[in-house]
Image (tube, rainbow, N blue to C red):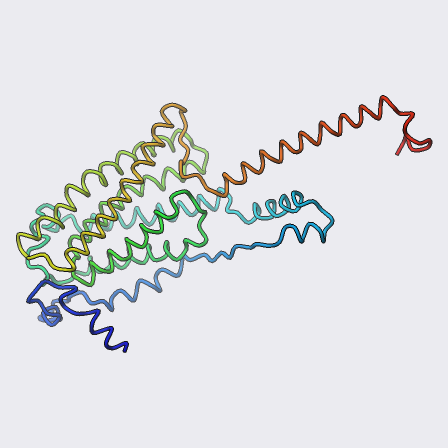
Length: 347
């Protein structure tokens, strides 16, 4: 059964243009072509950065009865204990520093790999000779490193702090891994490297802005965020749709008839563009807020932090109410000390 499914899954009509066979992409004369088995290496490369987190839940009401405490007191204790386990700014700084280092290295590597490639300057070259385009060593390592990084981000979603764009982040990571895997197997390597370099260049500025934000350098953070916003909006709202999507959607029709993998590739790229539009909206919202409030705050906001802030406000109100009641009780006792039994005034 598995063999039947495998044969059906790898049918040429799903992956290659008509008249092209898998045998046409076998290594020959020193030329190496992409193979799905190459992607196995991305999984072990991804495991080094995984962090496992198992959320802990318990019965607040039951513990309150056993400990002879109120439910609010038990909730305060758990919140205090969870705050000790929550990543501090130093840990967040280290995480952003790691991501900044990766994006910086992979962007520099991408530029070094692509600067002398003809398809960067002439988009027609992306499809020249497709799919009989041999794999270059630089393309191999560019793909393997990029995919390994996104696998690690996908595997670590369970331990990440939940934000308002958590669903969009999950969809983005799935789309990125799926897009890179599919483009590799169907030998869309040239267009794939262009997609990766366009999306990586903005993330450098985002992670650097986070680093300075955690370090308390607000003015530097604001300046870097404005640079990030400009790079993001230009690369993902102008270059990506009018350069990359034009290259993958329009130009192939001059060489080939539409086929399954061509349609599937462009559907995934359009999903990616929808996510780019969503994040552009969030960035513009943050820019609007920064212009009027002179400070930048992530509109995604950790949902846990928001919940904690609400609880802290409730606690302050309760404490203030309790304090007023205590003061009223003391004043009442002070005005009516004769009501206190003899011998208990000093207690």
